[in-house]
Image (cartoon, rainbow, N blue to C red; front, top):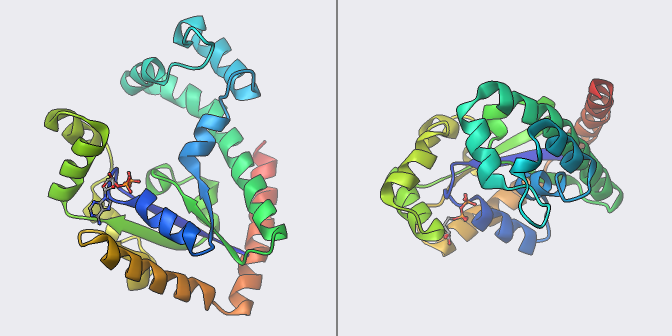
Length: 226
Ligand code: ADP
């Protein structure tokens, strides 16, 4: 079992690529979904966030108002660190758990879809065997984000510029097969993703064993951080 990181920019096509990979039978972990799960009403994460930031950041139904919390942490780096100190260990733990489940289910690798994989450089990134980058042109990124999220051009531009430029991320891809150009048609993307899957499937058993050992050692390291 080895881990593969998948990232890109906002609206560059990560979800489009992961849905093709899932359809093709790959195990994919979605860091965004996990980051919501760990602060679900009544959970340990939810209690810690409420105690740290107060009842004001809760919606009437008790769930965390992500817009309000986002405004607080966007403008205050100390608060952002406090939130990360609560959520990141819980997210890592859940990722580790899901990876172990995939391992026991017989998957040879697990793909982790994490929008901020490169920016956050957490302990998980040290365990990644390969890094996949999904990109499109800056104009397409802006237009697709604007349409998908019904934003003004200014709002879309702000969200894009708050992230590391896509061009910079492209150099982090393991090799050309791990660099998915999503500026063409969906069919173009699909055929690149299927070639990528062939490459991942074909990794030699020795590499897989080496990666499994790295995961076990890395997991112990993560547990020690707790
Ligand atoms: P991300 O997960 O990186 O934020 P998505 O996969 O959700 O990005 O793609 C962003 C938007 O662009 C979506 O509305 C999606 O349908 C659209 N899109 C993705 N790939 C293509 C493509 N190759 N051609 C046209 N539209 C696309």
